[in-house]
Length: 471
Image 1 (cartoon, helix red, strand yellow):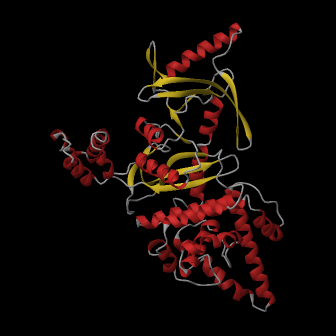
Image 2 (image 1 turned 135 degrees about the vertical axis):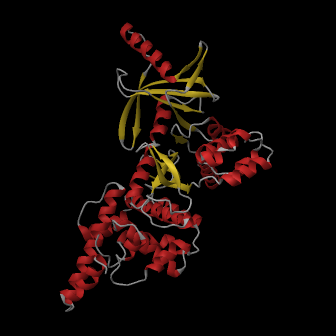
Image 3 (image 1 turned 30 degrees about the horizontal axis):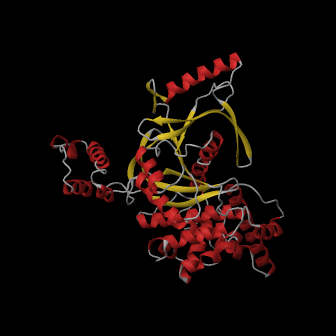
């Protein structure tokens, strides 16, 4: 970490887009906060506040930006999207793809509002975390979060009362779980709630599950972009029949979902798993190759982010168990089919393997955003208040989006090249390093100017040392 003597050029360049979102005082704190997220390795309010050495402000001023400032998150998000749509490279395009995914924002301790003990697939253990659901936009030039929302754990008392109010019967034998095994009681209530929604649609209002949040994000997208008909891709967790029906029948959106090898396909000969089906097709394919007849899996080329990728694909319409008819794609990456297959489905029954595979490929950038966003501070907060945490997450999305916009901004390139004399290109992480280098350059100029004006080294270094090593 090194001190800041002025806002980084990237912040000054894009700040005018956000001026109307904040009051005058809050706008200054907004610029301080995103500057700290860009430059500091310590993304806490205290760490960010200590960066600024030329104007000393109480940490509470920065804290109020997140806890008390009346700025509207929707207005902030719209300003962020205005930045992105101001550059051809980051503008929303008709060949873009949306994707839905979630990520855990892990913390050690439970003294945070709405935090929950959730299963982490990376560590194969339960951890204390908030869960962030993101609707992400991607095309071959760029990608960034479109809209997002933090999940809240279910309020069991509210859920139980709502079920009883709807005359949904609960098993008396399960009542003891409230005391003996609260986790099983929670799972039981959620299972009843999920099964009963067809009979009692009003039950959905009792709890916003991750699937419901995903539906709400997609609804908001369709409302705000009625003329931009983009497909949406998601992994196997979100590929559930009810969610797919909602996307297809309510939103009328094209989707590409993901199935596991244990999902089942209905054939005329009976029902088998996709693993068994792929094995059968592989045997037929290898026999066809040996006999010189047409292969079952055909070579399929797609273009993704400037690179060419090759797959060996099977693509036909099938009845998937639990779903309506789906376009099924089975992909291998090796010509001899020696790797493990992947399984995708789409509600567009006329689409071909290359189009479905390309759309599904654009789901990957949301995972990259969640990883790189954590480097920008997505999970590095010490805030206890849930609304403040949501604001922090929204400001991290602003930082990531500014880094994306910077990649396609000739005017900003010219400003920075004049200072740094370097070639500007690369990922958001690379642009964060450029911003840090530019801030370091400003610090050196500040010190040089002070020495020229007759200040002693001690006078110049005192505030810098205090920022680096507070008492």
